[in-house]
Structure formats: C-alpha cells, structure tokens
Length: 364
Figure (cartoon, rainbow, N blue to C red):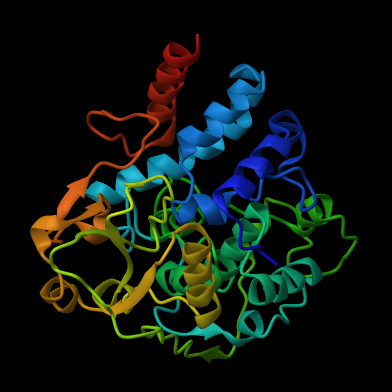
C-alpha cells in the first residue's frame, strides 16, 4: 500500500534512499526505487527538494545521474503539458491501432496469461501503484499487441494510480506506442522474466524481438465505464474577508503560504476531473494526504464558478498548472529544476542537457 505520509516523514524517506543503488537496480521489480512518485505527483514535495536533500547527504551529481534523469523526465512531461495536450498525439499517429474503442477483457480482469503482468494489474488495483517497467510492459502489450488506442489504455491506468499525472502517464503511453517517439517499445517474455524474476515460458510474447512486431492478440472488448464520483465532504465554509489558498490534487505543498491567516481549500475541479477521472480509492487517498499535511483543509468538489462565488477572488491564490490556467485567482509559479527553460524541446535529451547544466552551476 502507498502510505499517507507527512512532509517530515517524506523527508525521512528521502534520507533513507540510495540513488546509487537505484542506478544499478531500478529496472528490476524489486529494485531500489524511491517510491516518491505519489508525493511528487501530488506536489507535497518538489523535485528540487529531493535533489537538495540528496546533495546535502554528500551524493555527487554524477553518482545520481540515473535518478536525476528520471526526475527530469517528470519535469519535461510537465513542461510539454504547458504547450501541448497530453491527450493528443505529440509527434506521430499511433504505430498500430485496430480498436479506437473498447478495452481487452483479459487485461481488465488480470488474466492475460502472462503471470508477471497479471500480478502487476492486481497490484495496481489493490495498491494504486505499479513499477515503471511494469507500466511499460502493460502499455506495450495493450497498444502494440492488442492494438488498442493508447488514449483508452492510458485512461485506464490513470484511473487507478495514486501518482496519477496526466502528463507523465499519457506521454509515457505515447512513448511506448510511437506517438511520442520515432520507434515502438516492445518487451518479450525473456525481458519480462529477467526484470520480474519470473520463469514463465510459452506465452504469446515468448518470441524473439524480431518476431514481436508480428504478434497480434485478439480479445473481447469491453467498455471501461470509468467516471469521477468524488463529492465534497462537508459544506464549504468560507470567509470572504480572509485570504485563501486554493490547492489542487497537483499541489498539496505544506510550505506554501504557511501564514496562519489563510483558509485552505483542496479544489477538485469537475471540468477537469470529469475528463480525467480517478477512482474513489485515489480520490480518498489524495484527500487524506492533503489533510495529513495541511491544517484545517476543506475539500470542495465542484466548478470554478461555484468556488469563486464563495471567495474574494482578489484574495485567493493557486499555483500555476495547465489545469488552473483559466482560474481568476493570483497564479503563483511552481518550483522547477529549470525555471526559465526557453522553448521546450519535444525530445527529452535536449531538455535534460539544460537541466544538467543548471544543476552543475547550482551545485558546483
């Protein structure tokens, strides 16, 4: 399970993390990953805070390069979201797509016949978390072999993830199916066995990499019927004379405006979350995480017009995010590894080089 942690407990988690071990083992299902993604996705901590604590512990940038690149992928996807819709093909049409609607019943019910992936699907449902390699394996299976439209598949995984982030999730699915890459990602059974420590043979994917593009799987297709069902916990109590911090599921920063005189509201914008629904388990987990880190936090589910009518919009602020771009409040900058990136390159590595230079300048 993904625990509800306070900021202090998250800092302690960072202080126990070994980025060198991560670089050696991160591809393995039981590798030394950080498990920080739910707290990063929810904005309780920032990428900069993570790096700062690791540097303070004495780690050099070159020792942490694999981990730093992984953090940079997250920022790069967020930056791309500022200029592109993650729900639309970023570069190319999907390489192979036969079904624009529907989802494979075997995948939904965790009975694909590939044991490591079926266990991963069950883990996703039970915990709201999945190792990054398992996400890639499932994306390849669903998009490149069942030939399902990546948008449908990405929505399915987003619905269940506690680190649900439209940018990181959707653009990663695009990368696997060729919509955000000039190649398609495949994994055969041998690769799956290696990194999940399984020994299964004679599956549909137990072929060479040369043969994988020819593996096409059929399935009964079902409607996912995913809807956002979150509701406000109580009637919202607001004082129009008081300053307001408007939090979102992407910003639960406990250090943002620590002054006592702010009323604090976690706003679930129905216009956004009806388009990008999450399960009730994810909804409740995010709310509990917010309440563990923000004193007197109120939960409001509704539309921006409803919220604004209860506040003095001139005394309300929120952090910049694509989902808040039309809000009538004071919009404040988020924390970035690269605060002024210039034109955002679609490719990751040019952006990584810029971040790398920034970090070297900062921590030289």
